[in-house]
Length: 291
Image 1 (tube, rainbow, N blue to C red):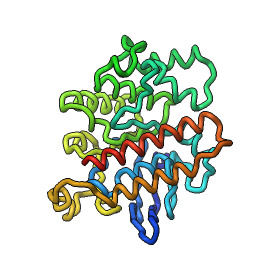
Image 2: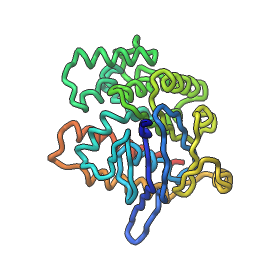
Image 3: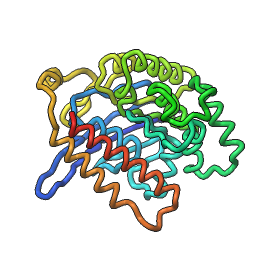
Image 4: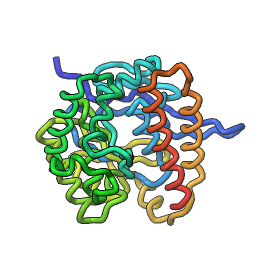
């Protein structure tokens, strides 16, 4: 019997309600991403890419449909169990790195292990040093983010994503804050890790050069996914930039739902994770407002 896909979505729909207005962010998405695949997700702003990544990462629940992660149906799991799935099975990489400025590179890489409940500090430090060595930054272990270049910070973020040996790595515009040379170096590293470690990588990107590095490309438009570029995608790309109200409303609704999930009874590790998630969402809203 073959292994189940790393990620499987079955007729997933996400609808945001803002007063009397309904916004369909995902419109019945069905797809499977196999273990070890390297996939890019491309599409114009507001097409549903970030919502898709949030659903895959168990950061939000679909309005309807099923979400299966590493063979486990997570759709109806309680938040406490979803936190375990995120900590153990999924690593996240962000455009703005999201490193803690007061912590060293080593301590930033150790954070997911602490959130997952690890208590052996010696073992955590050893694992973090191994990962920093894997991304070529063992000699920067004691440096804080402000003492690192953008490319080095993203390498630390990649090491952090690998901290708990997850099966899946989800990356939201991982090269969006880097110059072209550094972007190529980071993608070289991602390709190498995909081949050597067999991790499943899903990368959301606006950069055609980044998208082309993936072995499989998924195209999005108006909340739907396609295996090849839909005819309207080129029109959407050429329609010009500007503030996308639909996308901002969707992000605001995601943020509201995330805030509602915070409880004073949450364990401290869950609260820390939710704070990081909220920071990520607010950064995306700020980015869209200035697009």
